[in-house]
Image (cartoon, rainbow, N blue to C red; front, side):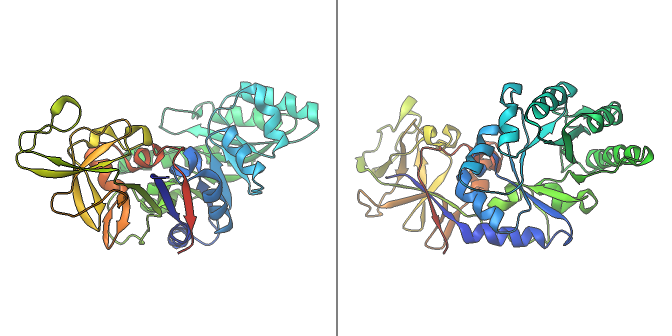
Length: 366
């Protein structure tokens, strides 16, 4: 295949160690592997994170959870998002934990669990300020008591999510809301199970939000998503590669690509590379980003096409078949997903998650 993604599994193990150095020994690590493990490939990446020290794995969907179970990954698995009530039987069959935020979910799940004579595991979500899934703070206690009283329901955890971890005032208010909810349970002699709130950024910004576990996604994949001093070094495990398909001689005044928005101001040599926005390399990087060839940065010329992009290789003596690195390192030079994210006006999470699942992933212990 001309397009491939290489994953350095040692880098993921390094990141687990770095993250654990920032939390107490008793604090559990929930490894978030949703969205195809942030583009790294669900099964092999999840297996590495689980065997490398995570206590729980978190996915987005039932389909992701079942894929892990089918591939014999026996970790506790938390589903973070919506599951159709008609699929609740699989929650029980595959021993999964469902995030609940609505008493209708509990009624359907309890009914299914009673039918199978099994205990359904749930993690109760409280909305502390995100405005997404979760019980509102003013009904949380009443809802929690109803869940406790439900037949065949076992509460595994309580969690919430930060809306803007970089907003210190708002984030600390969210922490206070969570503390208030936990205190209300204590006042009613209800013991709290595992409590988790901090994702990657909050894990390093707010130690007081660690509670019983941290829920880390992006950090496992080598990026913080914010800048700060004295952070443990993380390593980016992912490398996106392609190959040169053709070298073209372009004369001064010639245009390159759709809409002719690049016009050569001199004679040039241009490499045609068979990768584009269908593969997850954003069209918004047109005329902005660079790739690596022989360890040298080469500028993209014209519009990124659906399956093709063009690169300036003037005087580089390239030939068809030479390696092109779009994300990752080559001969000591490095282009990170964070660099591309800034150029395209998005976040690292999106840049990684959009990498096409059709691109083969190759896993290595270097």
